[in-house]
Image (cartoon, rainbow over all chains, first blue to last red; front, side):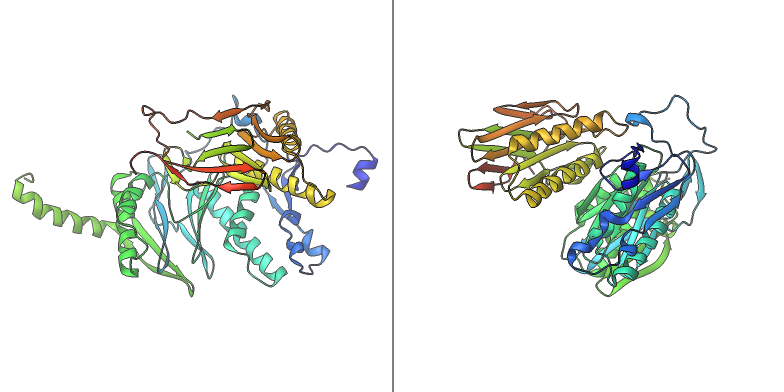
Length: 293
Length: 168
């Protein structure tokens, strides 16, 4: 820095505030000074605190000005996938995270058995929605950074800290095509982080194209005092209803329950069975009114 | 739509902000606080684009606090408002403008209460009353049903009763 000043070298960082520098070449370096917790009185070595986070991004990394769309843009080989239903809520017995398992690319079901809920560490699970590839990448980056923090500082980063770290890492990519909407589900906290920059802590979040339907089911029956079985049934019902109506959600439902002891995964359930059970129930009702032929 | 309102009285400033954090048509949170405490007697109210609001407001907040740590005394509301406006203006002229609308409310021990209106084009105006947003209207499709209200006077920032409008 000092040498740059003496030589009057004007580097053009995209951000003057944050210690992120986007250079014109293909690598992005993010320095961790912003999240250096030195003020907490810990003795961290200078080397550890200045280690840059380096990750290579494709050479498309040119921030569009004022976030307007380009007149000349790269043609995509296939439409990006965004459809999903994920949800998370807190209740007296911990946190439930549920998601469907369909990955859609435009009108095609690209994969019917995707893992949209990924454990980051024993007490943190993240549900992803948006672009599948971006989510996968950012989950891995987040896992790596959390682990590095743990190794350097000998304690785990809090969930709020994790969310803030993720939000700051995603900030340079705001305005580009990165589309990531993750819900970090800790054992007592739920934080929604989005590539637009939003970072919200709350009691109930549902993300994706199927979220309005899931919200409808959740808002009706959710209460703090549910027991574990009721909460799991509610989450499954919400995902099922969303997958029933939303074309871009479907196939199976994944459910994770996070408590102070850690996360536990429920076996993946095929919603087809649930659908048939539901139709049977309705079939019995419908027959009475003669609507079913 | 997000709503901010501020009213300056003879020896106080009253500010209110709605509590909605929305993502397109879905209300993700209905108890979101849009006010940032810059110092004991200055509040910054911030609405606008999703990530920009928090990033920009927290940046201003930390810098105002840093000023106090470095110099031993706090920035006056007028100085804080001008600092904020300068930052907004600088970013507007860069490749990464912040799309935020702000109200800064403060009480200066020498000059009394002050309310400053700033918008995303970095205009700054000291006004006796100011607002951002379309406000409440029975005919408006988006209903904002609760507001955080705070009062700033010579004794600092006071939380007032949360306003809930209309049927829940």
